[in-house]
Length: 442
Image (cartoon, rainbow, N blue to C red; front, top):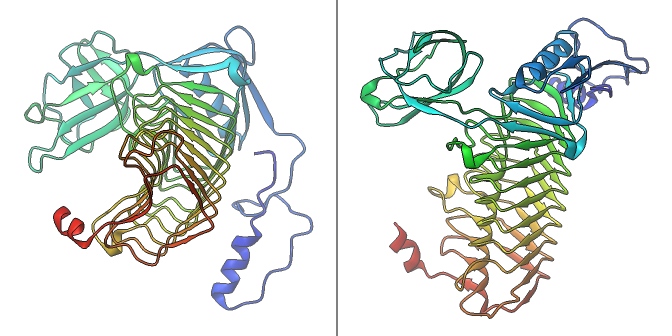
């Protein structure tokens, strides 16, 4: 990263916990071994260029992109500049800490190769580091793969992502042991499925100004708990700016247990899953000025997403515009346009009871227009959700009123504040569901 990471907030918090005074400001930061809180602002860092015909590294595959990322990461960080061209990926580009991956805007396209799927021909146990497949056509050493099977004891689906690193006929060695059983009894399969950009356990990463195309017409589905155009797991301090993520058979941009992720000025469109997916346990996501359209759900707050901000985004023609639920608390949804949702504009999911619901969220100054079919709802608050503030929004229906509702309050909701909202064109402005509706749902 080109800017210094001087985390005074962290220092102040540590001192507060210890009951000590705030530390003095660092006037002249120095690079000190092991210090990841304070670092100088260096005028120049390493930059490596990648291009199909010219650059420090020449090529148009995931291999050349990975080589550039690994080289820059090994030297402590810097920039990988991806020159114009179409790069065809047979595996994810695995990002590393303190690397900035920057493209040339719409002229830099990372395209996922078509997927193939085959059953396993032999059982592999959890300690194995190899698989044998029925049909090896379409599989190559270096491919990213996803193995799936049913747990024969519980019936739950087991999913593991690996890379093929060696081959003899229909036998492939994996980069790591399976750590799960993949048995023929569980209908085990392997597919060339992976996220285009992937990060696990990394920090201080920036992704900018490129196009990610999931090629969904030629790829099987892999949901956003495992993949997407961008998939991050257990990461922190990530900036995603000016990125177009499109056409993934799953999610667009998904981050799981990742903190302080900023997604700004991005497009996420035409995915079969979720456009933007701040995933379980993610703290303080910031989503600003994004275009999110043509997805199943536009913006999906997963489990336990807290203290996030979604501001100034345009969410259009998603089945659900914004979905909030399981322990998603203290988030602010403000200044967005939520247009032409095919089912609901903003949905508060019912969840399993009071302790699981999404409380204390604020829906302010949004424009929500033409939500759902003839019984569509602009804002639908379900379950025992409480402490929701809905203030200063424009809720508008430009079609016939039919049986459309501006705000529906479930029978178990409470302490819902509605104020200064402009509501027009609905058959009913506020609908309070009777208690019998909750009993019928049980």
